[in-house]
Image 1 (cartoon, rainbow, N blue to C red):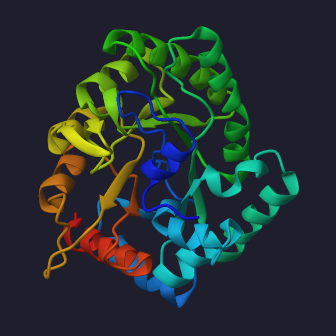
Image 2 (tube, rainbow, N blue to C red; image 1 turned 90 degrees about the vertical axis):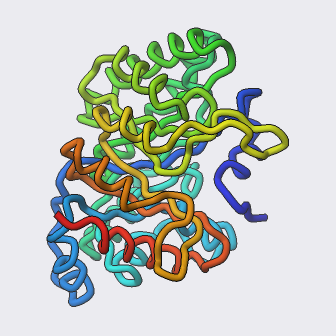
Length: 324
């Protein structure tokens, strides 16, 4: 069975609370890519991206249908990104290798695939490991410890961030306090491996840019930050329909001071190649104004274009509007 969007997938795991909080999330890192490439495809891409104020990465979720349908394996992702799209940085989703976090042979093979293709591993998006902002201390502690293995896997692969979910049920104040507690604990653990812990706006309280920014500020650790996503600003859902949204431009502006990655969410495009849901000509200057120069990860979730077409359309849009 495959799912049309990540929210639907996470819902199948029973992780969505009454506030419509989604457990999935995507991200990218600010650390400079260390891989050089020599292929013709990458040389062409470099000629374009050298003039951008950011670097382009590919979020694995963009290919979730292909992965769910078993037409591609997680191990194939680095080569797919490089050879088919000319993208030399990748963002993994842990669901696609959920039982491999401690499998040294598997991780070694994945790292080899990246090295062979001149691809940098940027981050691991972690879902299904518990509610980091659960107001129950015992459940919160378990969620924190469930992420330890992904911190270690991220370090081995050469990533510098894991993306976690700051969700829980309760009042805004209760969830905020719980989130700060768990994020601080996990970030302290991750700092030993020089790994960042980043949180995306992804439903419920976390899609309130002001709320999430205050949580991160409350943690007050250098390796704990945000992953502004251009599209995930639904505050409340009813019958799987968003009935209350936060202004995406305001939200990204509020989150950018803490950003260690940015997610370029896209669904549909007009005849001129512009994203219908988000005005990239308005959003990218917000990112640039914050002094951000790291990766912007392509996360295509649309259904009108194929996954490959959607990835290419998003990449083309970023390249067209992301000049220095």
